[in-house]
Image (tube, rainbow, N blue to C red; front, top):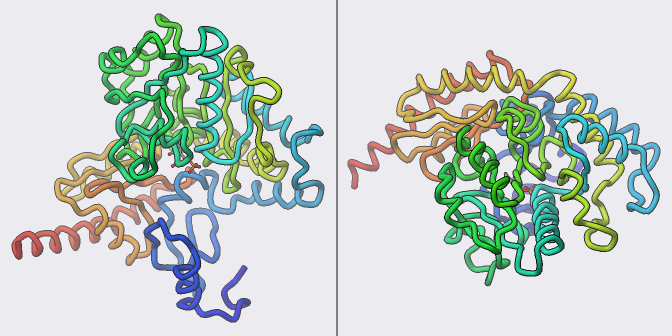
Length: 413
Ligand SMILES: Cc1ncc(COP(=O)(O)O)c(C=O)c1O
């Protein structure tokens, strides 16, 4: 849909959105009318260099041609029918994903938070079925993020944040341990615990990768205590961290994994994959979803994961991520450039992240900020060295401006 065909001006459109939509987002002040590859375009055709990729979704590139063709093709056959009959994209996608990541079974959902709901339900049902009604507790990490539905919110280890605060009681059965601290996780395990759930790299929490020892230690702990190890790979999955799934890069396999975002290449889809015994905790009537396994979303996903696998975008994520971190660490005020693959965080020694984000936007580049002092870059996995250089040029100028403003404010008290 193009603005010129609507009889509405750009300002009228923005006003309309603000008047009629429940706004929980801090908007970038432009209309994204078109997208292609590494760029978004506004209604006047101005190009924005995209280093947030629809929040780690458009990994094979904005409006990837294969995804687009698959959607058009599927649109001509069947869009939605619910899960009574078999559909072709569902079955082909299930085999493709399970084969690629070494899991036995998949359950389709529509988003990341739903994928986590499914994983949490699977683990709790497995615990109750195998060990009795009190065996349903899950230990997750402090500062984690697992979504906005009640299961996802409750699993999120940020009790005083806007994610949980003001919504009444959370779902019982979750406790939180310090990320990358094996002893703390071990101390939170009780006779009621059935699972440990983490993100291999905490994304929304400020881009903190799990250490190799921590991940290996969690696997050992789970094996010793007969617990399930659950990985939330909604953000880290499908090439983002330089491996197809982040756990494949660590060489540590969970019992179940959730995914979404890049899986659909832009269409909404999520899933939980698990080894057979865990997946089979969910049987007829115990779980379901009207849209989960939607034919159009599955066709898009089949194209998206095929692009990521066949073009080996994980490798580009590894190489470009390494390059970006090296270049970021040369910028002024950068205290640490960290992350894994193309999930990259840049922490400053002063609280300028929001200002740097706005400075980049003014210079036609899109990045995100987390808290006061971290910017996060999660571009499509097709990004080139030249585009990273372009971003570094823009960020340098944005950091200098933001630091000057901060200094002026500090002196003015
Ligand atoms: C690790 C993680 N889990 C879950 C979610 C929730 O996904 P969704 O917004 O698709 O529900 C996100 C979203 O950013 C995420 O990063």
